[in-house]
Image (cartoon, one colour):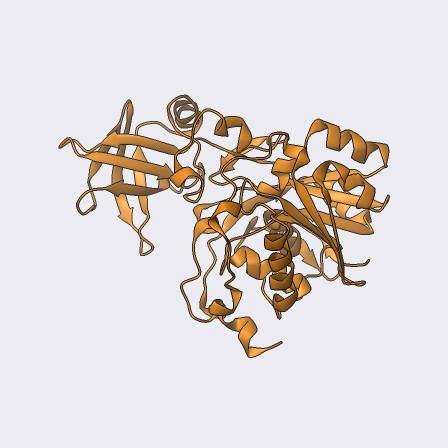
Length: 347
C-alpha cells in the first residue's frame, strides 16, 4: 500500500457537472453497466438489464431491503421563524429521536418546534451538530405522520435536495421492505421485476439483509488522513434463512456498499454469523482486506467519499480512479440516480 492511499486528497477526481444524474434512466434497468473483471483487468460496457448474462450460475446475490422513509419536514419555531427537521432514524433511545435541525439563530436545550401536529423538544445537543428530541408522536404514529406529511430526503446534489412526487418511487428499490433509511441503497435502484425474472431463469439465488442507511452516508471525509475519519454506526439485521444461504454460497455478490458493510461485519473465520449488537461502523479502505464477497455491484460515488474508498479497498485506489476516468470518458451518469459498475474479483 502506498502512502497516498491514506490521504483523503488522493481520492479526488474531476467530474463534469452534467454527468451528475438528476433523474434515473427512463427505464431503471436500462441504465448503463460497466463490468470490470479484476483478474483479467478487462472492462466491458453494457446495460443493467443484461446483468444476468455476466453473473456465474452459482451466484448468490445479496440485497439490502431497507426502505427510505419520508423524513424531511418544514415547520416553525413558536416565535414564528422557519424550521426544517430531518429525522435520522426511526430507532429511538429512551424515547428520544436523532434529528438534524435547520433554523435561523442558535438552537439550545428545551427549544420547541412545531411541524403541524408534530411537536419536537430538544433534549440533547450532540457534538456533530445533530440533536436528540422528544416528540409527541412515537413509533407507528410517528411513521404514519411522516409518511403522510414529510418529503423523501434526496441528496443535495440532486436538484439541490428538493424532492417531487416522482422521487417517491424513483428513490426506492422495487424490493424495499423495512422503513428506516434516510438514503436509498442506490445500487438496488436498477433492479426491476424483469431483471429478477432473468436472474431466476439462470438459477441465481437471492438473499437479503437490512441495513438502515443513516445520514453518515452523506458525511464528507474532512480529515486529511482517512484513518482519522469516524464512521457513524448503523443498525442491521439478517434472517437465519439468509445466513444459511450465505454460509452455503460459493460465489457471493453484494448489491451496494451498505450490503457489503453488513457482510464484512458478519464474516469471521470463514463463516457468517450475526453479531450481538447488530450494528456496524466498519470503514473499508485500501489496506483493509475484503473477505466476504466475490463481487460487488455499486454506483459511481462522490470524490473523496468513504464509498469511493470502499471500492478502492477491493481493486486498489489507482485502478478505481482509472475506472472512474473511463466512466467519465464514456459519459456514464454518476451518483444516486446514475449508472453502475459490477466488479468481478475472480474473472
